[in-house]
Length: 163
Image (cartoon, rainbow, N blue to C red; front, top):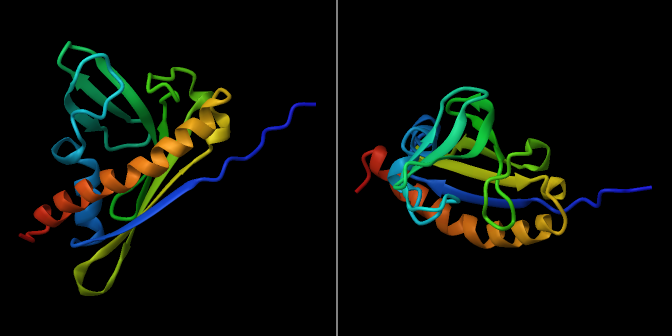
């Protein structure tokens, strides 16, 4: 009997100077302005990052060598509130075409006092990945999401008119 052992999700939070609608817009529609061009899974550097704004839409990157690489697919799209996407990336930082092996990321946006928003990110379902990839990916994103969220926070503040 095979049993899948759950791997704890990665949970990160940040408070940004923006309304939930502005923060959602910054995270999704303006991802190309803040996602690092060095953080891609294609063979060449990223030229552009795009999240298509609908359930079933892709998060994909266009690369300097002309490649179009899928990072994941949108599973939930609730502007100003939350969105969920599959993370179709192997532990070796390559595209994972078998969606059954994808982990999942949920991002929620909650209004705070003073026009701020708490952004909660949960990266989960690492046990779906081909072993031993789940633990490797969990460790990597646990260390990586804080810096990525800090870049996002800067863009959210700029979009909300903060200096």
